Length: 75
Image (cartoon, rainbow, N blue to C red; front, side, top):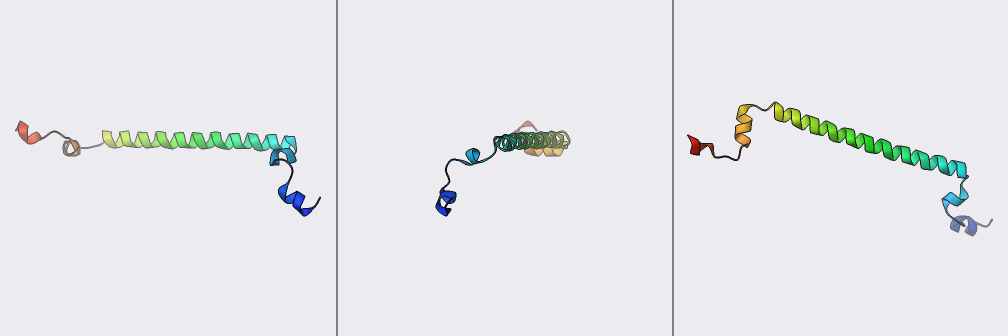
């Protein structure tokens, strides 16, 4: 095989790899994508939980300051 043939190659990586190895790589890829999705979902749930806890632990003063209502009208 000449240098030019090795560089340009004939076919894709899939064609050049052992089918069993290709299947193993594909299954690992799928596993990693699934693990990444699970980690992102856990992080999203953690952030939601933290936000709810912060809201639940706010003092009356903090809630009053965040309110859009002009409380001076009701004095």
